[in-house]
Length: 241
Image 1: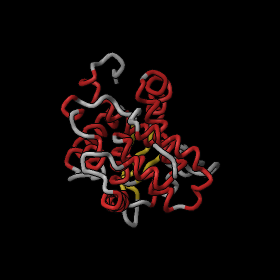
Image 2 (image 1 turned 60 degrees about the horizontal axis):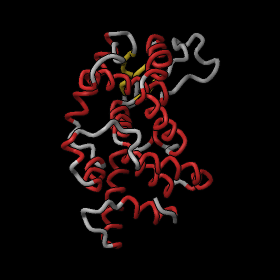
Image 3 (image 1 turned 45 degrees about the vertical axis):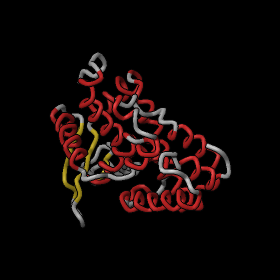
Image 4 (image 1 turned 90 degrees about the horizontal axis):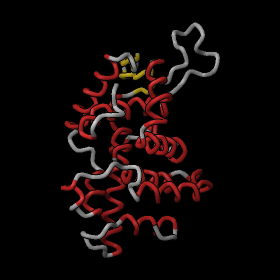
């Protein structure tokens, strides 16, 4: 997988594949210590659920959307109150979109408010399905990831990291590609500040976030062309974004 010397446009399919591989490596479940022996598992990370993988990939590609879900989690989950300081620092980073590659020129012309609100929706899944299928084909053909069906109920697709995949991530991708650091920080934010992510209906929660933003915009008389995220941040944390 020759990603290092490729042009940005040529690297895009490889980055899709490496982002999925990172998600499985960082957020996949591992058997309890001692349980792998005789079980057919070798302790490798496994992430279960096709729609869950797509949702997580969406969040890594759109840091502001991840940030909004973290704000929503802070309001829903009392246990996050003790992590307020660390969460607000991470939110400032996410909302500044420092973890995103530069946007194409035609998107830079859009207002930040329009962009953030558009990203809250998983759309029709058409583009994500195609992106995911191409990336998974790349990974499975190169023996970096195994895709299988786990017994239910309900039966779920499961994504299991192969040893070659771990080696690629830890020896080449993580230390050698700038965007990898952003993906790692975003995965860490999901683990620490979105503790119920394995049980979360992402589309339902984003629908609730959309309603909250619209309600706040109306209450605070925020014009449509102005980003409402700073208003939300200040209303929740009592400090400026």
